[in-house]
Image (cartoon, rainbow, N blue to C red; front, side, top):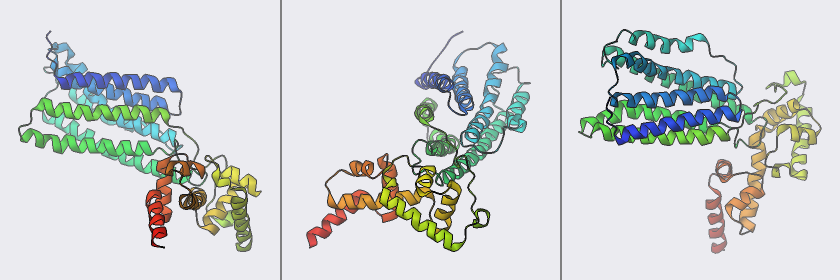
Length: 359
């Protein structure tokens, strides 16, 4: 047996090592649903190994193994989907039909005993099946994560570390890779770019993606978006009339302003409900129906107002101001500030400076 490895092949090996290490680290972390994410990472590693196997002069008996490894790629999306289902407390199970495409691919490829991976219509069919599966599952995960984040905004004043924004971005990034794989890279080949160069670029991008997945997955924390008490969107179920709701709203605003609860970075609905002397359920009703904001936006509106004052009256850095008013990172601060003021904190400070000079 002889081996001819290119830089792209070596990079594939590196990707596989990183993916297998991630799988082991995830299993050791004990986080919610990580066994499914670890399985997803393991399948990624297998796909990287499978991609480099044609560089080896393998015996004929290795053909079935090569093809089954190829078919295993159809397990990646169901595993990632199940991780998202469990981690975001979504209702749903990984039913048997999620595995049907992988079983179909393994059975269909089995008869090709004469070659490692036949370049036939069957293989092209499986390739497009993988593409279709990726698009469908990633779209479902994106909607699932966004729904989860909306639920979190009813009970949490910050989404940092719990909002799964990285998972949403990861899905979009995967879709971009698929688009590159079926459009840009064939065009590069048409323009006489060497295949080894194309594969190297794709593998490099994939490696960066896996490293990003490693960091983000290990930093992720999972919480219930609704807490222990289910929050109803209607007054009829809570028994609040308009006058009572208005009185409670005024009380909630008074507590927020007098006690400056918004300065607590990890403030939760339960904390504010306790200070206001009402249940989580009632407080949520008042915020959403009477004040017209979810808990997340309500708290951040006070933080932004406090930040505007500090930006205008002090020389503290934008990051210092963000921490001082209750935000726990600059990105969240900028997003909330721009949503409310229609400009970034830096732009706001420059505008104030220009106004003072004109006077």
